[in-house]
Length: 175
Ligand code: SAM
Image (cartoon, rainbow, N blue to C red; front, top):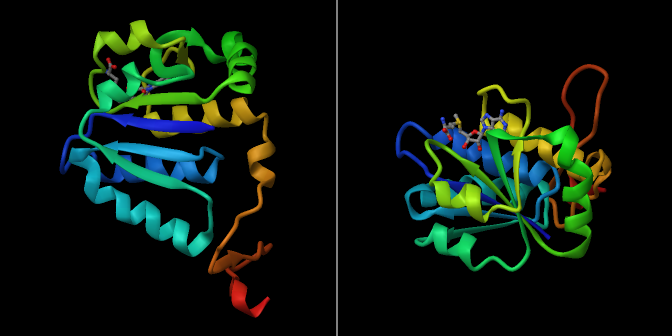
């Protein structure tokens, strides 16, 4: 299992970012998203997409995000520009993920130092400041080595039929 924890959410400012963390986690192969109470309003948007375009993908809200980290039974990868280059640690992260569930922590603003200490891997997707969405996308793609792009979706109402030009979406009932 791969669970993405979105740590820190500033109401107003982070709404779209948090939604996109969730959509990216889902699209690129994570199993579950954990949101803080402050971000609870984002749950529905991600769940709606899962209802329409398929899953499985779970969204959960917690009022104690740090205790989720403390009590996590498995490995923890914390994405941070200060971490070890992903290309240096990705094989080790994949090996850990083969053995046990993986919690992937992404921040919004400053992440408590406790997370750096508790993480098995502090991972930098470059050591440049950028975005948690971009960092998560690259991380998941390296974790799954591209296999997430081939995934099948279950219980979808709609499916996009890829087109060279234009848009085609079909109801899966009609298939
Ligand atoms: N300045 C904040 C700090 O000191 O932690 C980081 C804010 S950054 C906009 C929000 C999140 O994006 C970070 O918590 C981290 O998860 C992610 N992030 C940003 N740049 C990253 C990078 N180069 N590699 C991995 N994650 C990154």
